[in-house]
Image (cartoon, rainbow, N blue to C red; front, side):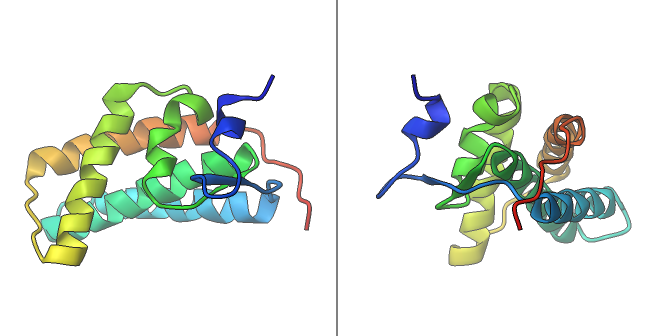
Length: 143
């Protein structure tokens, strides 16, 4: 019986199967953790903190997906599959999905409507993801 992730993989689907790579996983984890730490720096502009937090969340969620042996066809899917990759519920992935929408409005429409609350929610959700990803064993490298 295929896993739910298998059902999302294939031609014209959101995921494609690709063996995990220990070096890639470690790099995504390192990048996510570094950005998350920097996003907590209140001396930075709120826009910078949001960008750092969003990119930290994306790197960490992508690390989890790669650990499972899949690559994303788009940025959003890494947040949608958090229940499958890390067992995280809607209280986490909905925040990250909302931040993805905010990021897109900023990138494509010049409309960055953020406040301290969304940044705090983003960092909290990102820390939940970080803890779960750090608990994963490093995948064996296929490269």
